[in-house]
Image (cartoon, rainbow, N blue to C red; front, side):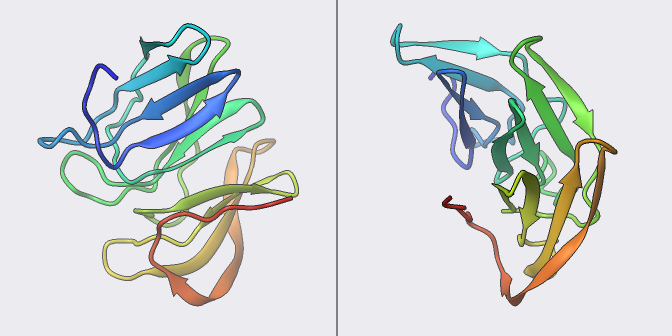
Length: 156
């Protein structure tokens, strides 16, 4: 990669590996790079609107969604952005109801879920579901135990 980073997110879309955000040892990053396995090269993509590290990331309906994490001031985020590979642009998505650092994003039964994370005070056990038709988040349910973050995977 052209930028060293830790606490970044990664996604695979249209044959590319995207590495998004993270921290360079000094500050949270908004930069994005993608790797072409066919060419064996990295290229720089448009940056997100907001720097974020420890964000949730997944591909949903042909777009990369980045949610939550922490910004350059170390504040937990409830903001969400999506990347359209056809236009090579980041666009806004309605904010989640809760701030979620280390949130897990997963797609299950056609729905985008934000699972657990930390709001800056406590680990969360709540789950939010996103509706792309209305661009809204709503409470989906709760887990039995608080989920401090990390990652969740859905196997079909």
